[in-house]
Image (cartoon, rainbow, N blue to C red; front, top):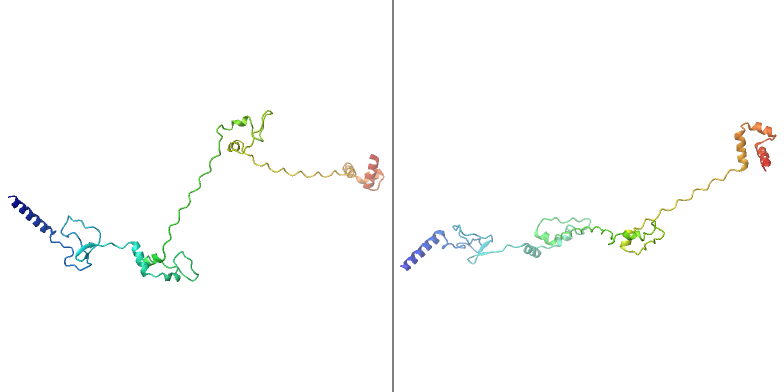
Length: 233
């Protein structure tokens, strides 16, 4: 009884497999060497075919690998000669004035003979801002006892000594140099002589100089000045 049941189950499984086409499917049946093939039967909806390209090799459906970029460059290295770069230099390389740069046609030969330079390094980050000036731990209260040089102080105080520390420079910043002294004023003009002053006085007081000369009994203003000077001395 058990054997009969097992036979019935086996027959049903065979019929099911035959109905789905799994038992009879051969990927490379009636196909030539190198033809494309699939491992999954077209009638098997539950089978998931991979994206790997498969071809028939010696009657077996075998996956093949696609060439990578490195393999294409190696192939180009064996088939492409780079002598043309002496006539048409690669872009960005030195050239003579009569030469033209080669055009980038995107081919493996161009990429092999004229490799693109690596991207330039990013710009350096900006320098950090300068640190603030050092501040004394106790502040600048010590300047009440020892004032900074050049500042007012009491008679009993002494100036602080410039020891070159950051604390001293922070509390006693050096004042800018004083501007140069202005040039001295020009010397005043020498005073006029006594004779010239007397003559100007005579001309101002006595507008009628001829009448004054006649009154003094002299013939010219110079004689009148000499007469007045002699009288004053």
